[in-house]
Length: 414
Ligand code: HEC
Ligand code: HEC
Ligand code: HEC
Ligand code: HEC
Ligand code: HEC
Ligand code: HEC
Ligand code: HEC
Image (cartoon, rainbow, N blue to C red; front, side, top):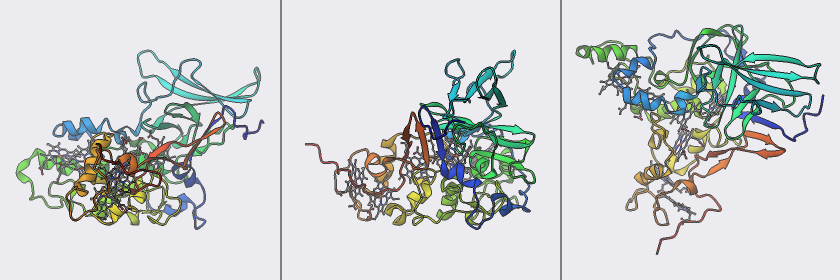
């Protein structure tokens, strides 16, 4: 076998934090499955799905369904699988000259196409191959996506992923130059990228092939909706129904009314790094104390905290955060897609008012873009590609709001 260290024409991608870490041993020498073995997922009562909200919240549903939260996992289809299948664009060469991958789209008369990945090893005519179907798509594709396949009731990661602007790349966690289809998908991966997967007894990548629900849907953040739907449908009983969840007057959770720590917990569930599971995946309910469910790296002093995947850890280092009641919701409305830096700059100015006595005023004239200087895009060391022999790191928005060395304060226009 040729040296996998040969980097020419190689694309290797490592998303160390979210993808590689879970499979290694825990700090205490335990392993992810034993940590939560014996505990079973709580009963899944009262969930009705996004379709049930459509009747009364059509606008919200419509707009939310265009966000990356909703699009973060899906069934494979011509629109959801973003890689190219046309001849010439469907091959990924590897560090090993005796191994390449071929991605194919299979059209059936009338029905949805199916998609597959094939590893071809050896020199023609003596080649061997393994083909597996793409069964689940993970990632909206804003940055990239990874594909999973079922072997019986076990879920595995496919060896080839898609990365925006680059196309097909070696999947995270797989060694370049090897045909490996054996990387198990742990529950925490699905917990961050889907609404629900029903786990089966170990090994940890066993799930019910019929018991899952893709995309992050409304009830992930709002809790089960059946009671609310019933209440709203029969207005007369509103407010008088026993058993309505705490913090809710409407039979459904509204995170706007959570205390600050619980609002942060909701986002930290998926935006504070991988952590260590203490209870089975999909047990956490919004409004509860997260640290009983996932042991997350302590914010602030945890050195490897990175701009990737840990917006909570970075934001919590900010003086803004420590000196105010700021939460993620100060700037983000998760029901809409937001990329306008002028809009976000307006959020800075809600506190840093030019005439405010409470908050520090910028020592410079107020422009409409605070973001480029105080929340710059930076390379993340947790996502590393080798592309054509070059080390490449994608950029993420740094959520540590501060004065960055090397930036110059804006000066007034004359
Ligand atoms: C039959 C109509 C109806 C359906 C179906 C419905 N809602 Fe509502 N919902 C309402 C109305 C009306 C309000 C406004 C109530 C109010 O002002 O307190 C509301 C309020 C809410 C609130 C804010 C609650 C609060 O206490 O502040 C949330 C969150 C919510 N809905 C989510 C959902 C979700 C998620 C679904 C689907 C699972 C859904 N709704 C289905 C009618 C409905
Ligand atoms: C990623 C988490 C998340 C998801 C998913 C989510 N929401 Fe929300 N929702 C929130 C938060 C946080 C708030 C409170 C702050 C706010 O209004 O932005 C909220 C507030 C609401 C409210 C009250 C708004 C108001 O103005 O009082 C409604 C209604 C609502 N959501 C409906 C929905 C519906 C319908 C869906 C699915 C189509 C959905 N949400 C999906 C997090 C979420
Ligand atoms: C169940 C897990 C989960 C929860 C809870 C969650 N997120 Fe996310 N969020 C994700 C994932 C996964 C993505 C990346 C989706 C993708 O591109 O595939 C994401 C993406 C985002 C983005 C990027 C949107 C874009 O268009 O680029 C923002 C902003 C965001 N989340 C904010 C929040 C906030 C604020 C909260 C808390 C109210 C929250 N999220 C709660 C999992 C979650
Ligand atoms: C702790 C929660 C968490 C876990 C576990 C996790 N992810 Fe993610 N993932 C995220 C968040 C949040 C983002 C986007 C924001 C970011 O990168 O900070 C993301 C981004 C991605 C993206 C890029 C999506 C895009 O287009 O923007 C892919 C692909 C992805 N994850 C795949 C996976 C796979 C496959 C696994 C499991 C083997 C996994 N992730 C485990 C939270 C998680
Ligand atoms: C002070 C305002 C502010 C706060 C508070 C804030 N964000 Fe952001 N966030 C931004 C801006 C600005 C962007 C960049 C938007 C863009 O350029 O598309 C962003 C982007 C993101 C992204 C996309 C990441 C990327 O690099 O593409 C995620 C995920 C996200 N925020 C999550 C969160 C979470 C989770 C919290 C709470 C811990 C939070 N944000 C708090 C302003 C904020
Ligand atoms: C919820 C209120 C709030 C918001 C929103 C907010 N800040 Fe702040 N910020 C503060 C407070 C409070 C301080 C520190 C107290 C002081 O010195 O007045 C601070 C401090 C700062 C500092 C000094 C940081 C340091 O390390 O000393 C900078 C720079 C800053 N903010 C920029 C911004 C930018 C840029 C935004 C928008 C992306 C923003 N802030 C959003 C409240 C806020
Ligand atoms: C071109 C880059 C740039 C832009 C744009 C910018 N800042 Fe600054 N900001 C700086 C630099 C550099 C400093 C530190 C030197 C100074 O105070 O003059 C600073 C200082 C600050 C401080 C005071 C921090 C301290 O410790 O004194 C605050 C608050 C602040 N900026 C907020 C903002 C807000 C709000 C915006 C948008 C309305 C903004 N900045 C736009 C570069 C920028």
